[in-house]
Image (cartoon, rainbow, N blue to C red):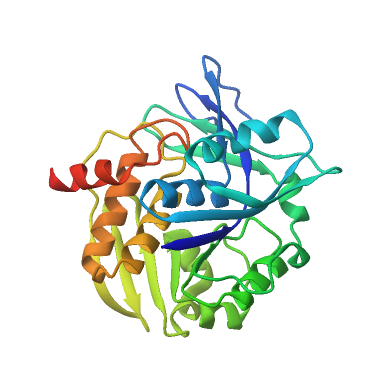
Amino acid sequence: MRITVVGSINLDLVATAPQLPAPGETVTGATLARHPGGKGANQALAAEKLGAEASLIGRVGNDAMAGEALALMEDLGVDLAGVEVDVAAPTGVALIAVDPTGENQIVVAAGANHMVTPEQLPQRIEGALIVQLELPIETVEAAVGRATGFVCANLAPAAPVSELLLRRADLIVVNETEAAFYGDGLHRGGGRVVVTKGARGAAMYQRGVEMAWATPPAVEAVDATGAGDAFVAAITVALLEGMDPAEALRFACAAGAFAATRPGAQPSAPERDQVEALLAG
């Protein structure tokens, strides 16, 4: 199956600390790591590892961070022909603080991600499409409008979107906070809506009626960064493969749970056999 992801590309600078800082507080004793990230890049890499033929449309800066941000996708064979280099804006950077339980705080400097315009998109996007909201909204809306197949809209981070996008999406994925932001508007389009609830699991709805519920396997969380992106890729792959709602949710919950057991957004994305092994117990 072919999945095109239109989305963000970042380099994640991850500080693992004894605790997360309160406002105005300085926390010492952290260790620093650098990982490829960005919701779009994370989801493209995760989809590829789960068996899809993934391609990414996005933008990086003309700087050394670009190579780091793209390295894992290049190694895995994600199609990066749609990634352009911006000579004026830097590669996006996410500053991430993680505590020993895997909880995190994230600040993103979008850089070149905010330079992705509708003109960078093909006139038709064949196959399936995944979008998020770390690019300019007009670009996301244009991508959805040019899609010819299945559309998954991960409405994160929460921001106003058009009624057209909500109605066109075959699948909307949000967490509880994002679901509260959008309210009943999520359910007016007729597509499936998945609300993730962390370690408590995820529910799938259609027109506001719950279709299925699943809980993730018990794991020892190390870093939740990228777990949601692994979930988005997995639920898209599962539905495209024809899994029923409950089976698809279980598969996606297991992918997200596995991702939380390892540090980094992209390094933690699971292979297909790792998800299946976790499901098998």
